[in-house]
Length: 284
Image (tube, rainbow, N blue to C red; front, side, top):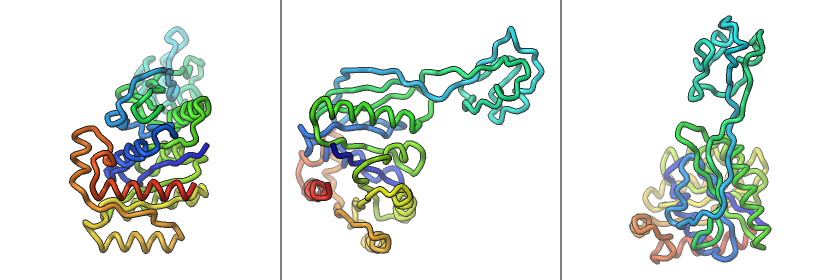
């Protein structure tokens, strides 16, 4: 089984639209994993039908036993997040650091599991998909991404499928690192803007640190050819291959409105994504 993580150093580069098209091209061969847990919207195009649901336990939260609490105020003084007031803890402010438990002389504080959302296995029109929904106010974490990826691998193994296609989170934080761990290839989607160039450097530093093979794909390259050339130069300096360049195409917006993958509507962007898919097969 091979695993491809589609990531981007910043949001809005077209990563999810690209993953939807790759899923359509890999139909019958892949399990899709939506690891963009802060904004899981891949199902809007793939049209999920939930088959299995599992509870996700996020970070532990502090709970104070009022029968043991002496109201000494030690936990309130040491809480950096202002979550403690008297003998009560605000679960929305608590970050689960455990300092209050450490400093409590009466041992009145305990750290308890808190359900933060659900992880799912769904069937879509392009194959099975692992994904999740967080409750409002809960934070995304590498723990949830790892859970989604494990469910995707289990599904791929049980269904005898050869590929796990991961839609990773934007940025360089914990969910991104969890999306990248152990993959065979990282496809980094960028755009020819100043912020796109800057954040590409950051995410490539992450892939290099974890020794993950990465290739770069430039979306809407023709809107700013100068920055596109600078990005190609940056990749050359780091010995990273540019897997392709996608031209600007209004069909992409039309596909998003219709809830369809770009490759099913045709046009320059669709042809470019098909070429990318052939290149990815060669890399793997």
